[in-house]
Length: 232
Length: 272
Length: 128
Image 1 (cartoon, chains in turn yellow, red, brown):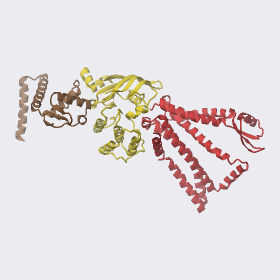
Image 2 (image 1 turned 180 degrees about the vertical axis):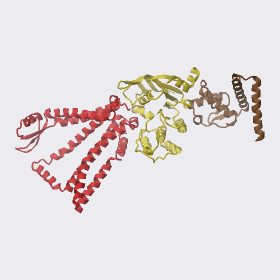
Image 3 (image 1 turned 120 degrees about the vertical axis):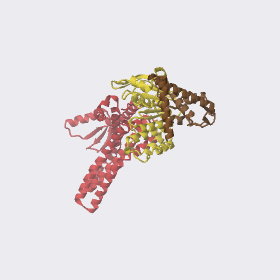
Image 4 (image 1 turned 90 degrees about the vertical axis):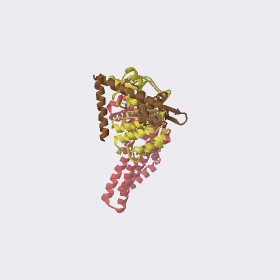
């Protein structure tokens, strides 16, 4: 249980448009954290900064004591909201790729999950449905024994049965001493898996507290608090 | 890590580029069979197509390489590439090395296609006449100068393409979309050409080709300016002076372009 | 119980209730070995830390116990299980009565409704 991610006064602009403003937070090992907020409120940008995909930010970002770079990228298993596998790949080639570059990739685990979800490793990514592609990516990402999992909208656009399956993959496979950050705008029935939630809206952090604290001190569920904070 | 990056880079590019070689090969064999079978119209058309293919192979390879660079690093796939635990300059190096390899191979295919196409047209005789002519002047070795020139030109162009695509990913250009890379490329190219011309003309280090007395090639410390001035006055030149400054400029710029590109990739990357 | 999603009750307490129900109802038998925390967390769709906390609380209540090497078991102490069962029964009864009171029912009316319900069940039982 140590601070593994520390962010102090983070700011990110796209041209003159500010998307993150004075964000400070810490994440601890051994926890599952929900990053909640409506679409387009800066969740993805925040995760991209941690993943090392955005380098032109202001402020301090420390991943296990280092700024985002090769060292932090080796610790982070990142699932973007997009399909980032080459369309020409077969699922098996995507596994080869992960095996080559990530020393913590557990190929056997990945292959077992492929079987469990009846995915054909020889099928091309191109010919898979959106839901299948998302499953393949999540399996690859969760087959790493990483210290940090950054999962950007792993449940978006899935039917309830698949959502349950995706949550099971996450809960079953993350390493115990790691931190799992899950961003989502669909919070019904996922709040039970979080230790802590961070609500981001209008470029800033609005709430950063444990789920039990929110329930005890505010007398509200996270869903209710979310609806109150982001009243439309 | 570079070897792993190279492995995957070659594996991915090998899905497309060799196809163009295969098509060229098919037409080359058609030219050759037309020649032996002596079918005139077929020989002429296939030779002509092969000539065009020869040009196309090198151009298309460049296009494929540029697209690949954009797609693999700055579209969705970039999310995977830029989160690999490797230094960004290795990503650039892997792309550059693989691209350079394919370009040389494509030039080779182009040269072969030209030769076979000339053979199809029945023009190989003329080709050897040109060579003989050069030999008379003792300049057959000048041909070899083409090799380093092509290598330099290729690296220079690659450097500009990679720089332009990487620059176009900066947030300032995001609103322009896909056209950004193209515009940045044109702008850099124009600026570099002007700078290069200035260097070529004024740097006092040139090749002098003597056309009249003792015909031959020699290095000289004069610059190109005087020569250009004289030829503008309409004087019949006895020597041709070609400035080396341009080439020196290109070598320096290749280094700068690759360096700046890798710096942007390391410190300023900002994927959409 | 699973639907009892009171907003102000911490999730670990809800999980405790879910688990308690399994124990007192005998779904989990006395002396039975529990799955790993992670597996239970997946089964209940809940954070493993929350599961761990709920199980630790139940251990303190004496409904579960841990053998250092082999894992966690359901308590074999029937007295304790029966006590937990009657506690839960009283809780449900209280809740029911409170709710009926809120609806404005008088004591006699409640008795009437409950008796009616029991007769109905009895009738179904004898018919079937």
